Length: 109
Image (cartoon, rainbow, N blue to C red; front, side, top):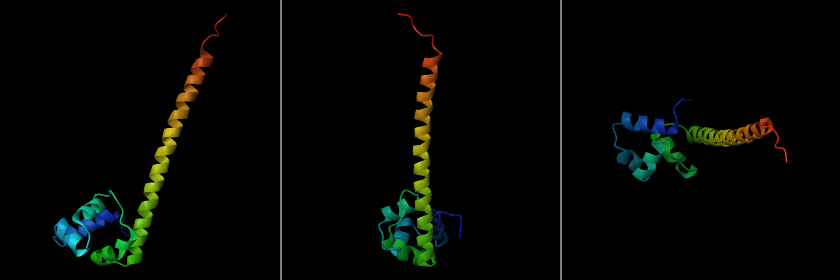
């Protein structure tokens, strides 16, 4: 399996065939806007499009499904990692404030 994303594979095949984005989209019976969003990695195709993409890329539908599934998992993982990083940053700020408060001399009343 290629290390290319599905979008990169679609764009490479479009260029190999010397097609415009519109012509490539028409071959798959999707809107040019949809094809462009796939090639730019903005969206992954829904399962109803996998067979059309497989024919365009000349590969088994199951391979397209595996690529999409892998990319969805990677995107979800990246999102979860970003959320964890944000949580760690917030916790670090709280701990730093608490430590700073402890380091200050107590006020006498």
